[in-house]
Length: 65
Image (cartoon, rainbow, N blue to C red; front, side, top):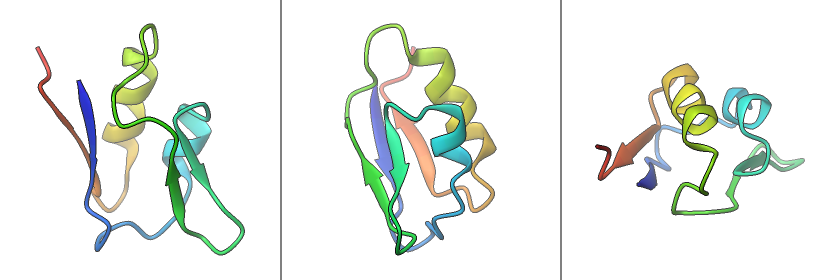
């Protein structure tokens, strides 16, 4: 499963980071840092929650079962 970011929609609110900090990070200037494009094994549930919680719908998953 691959994480897709719509960089134009991302506002760096950090909801994703709070739910999946090993995958998402918002740096000091509010920019999202994606630590993995592929969802790490065992983190599927956390990443799905982070994607669903994104208030601007900037995150999606590709290749989901």
